[in-house]
Image (cartoon, rainbow, N blue to C red; front, top):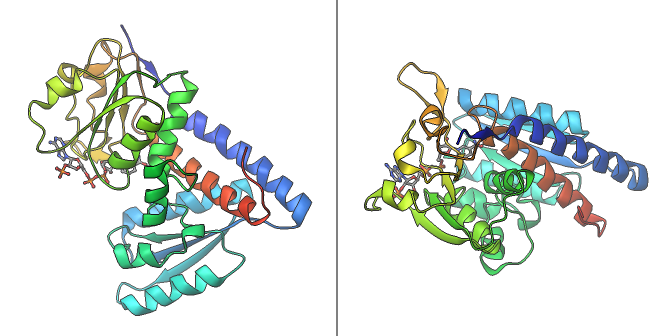
Length: 285
Ligand code: NAP
């Protein structure tokens, strides 16, 4: 079997175009445009690129972006006060704080659950756990959209999620459970990881280890979703999956770059538009 590529870039462009239509409708009906506040602390280059891409995607969809840049030396109290003022600002529908190591628990806890478009607040996590509507973390939500796009029905399938972070692995596992998959979560202490992964009809890999997963981890015909954004030995961007190696065994894989990454941004816009619609008693569907 030769795997088909899941074109995350094209799918994300379609979702962003759909959001643009929703934003235009909201503006026509209520004279209101959704706003996303991005708080960037310090000069971290990776965060700068990430923020630039998000702001560009927002603007193209008609979402206002409200950029707040703070120096590295900003005190925790000043940062929390800024978040509190954004919570109170009725023109802000979503709040992001970058880089992620700055968004420690205190920052995440301070963001209003109504504006938690990253889906990291304990309120959003609890809602996912008990199956109530709420903001879903963008990366696993983007992967769910990718699975829909290839017509992959999770029901009754064996899914293995490698990685148990709060932003990818755990919410991914819960979302697959919600879709009636039989889910295993693997991590750094898992024994015989290749054998565990070979049981998967759907293998989602979010570990942050360049090209860890090779053909030996993959069951014939499995869908393999590579979340990793790593650098190979030559400094080139790559994923957690050795794509070349798994191509002959998997049925579908997304490329890296151009797979899960663009979907994460598209879902951030989706969550922001959803937050804005909620203000007017409306929802995306
Ligand atoms: P993380 O918080 O560092 O978590 C990594 C997880 O992988 C942990 O649960 C860890 O296990 C597990 N792990 C590490 N080494 C392992 C190994 N050798 N075998 C099995 N499990 C192992 O990472 P993250 O934030 O979830 O991100 C994971 C990757 O996805 C990174 O490359 C990141 O850049 C990428 N990412 C991409 C996007 C996107 O939009 N494309 C979004 C988010 C993240 P323990 O819990 O036991 O330590």
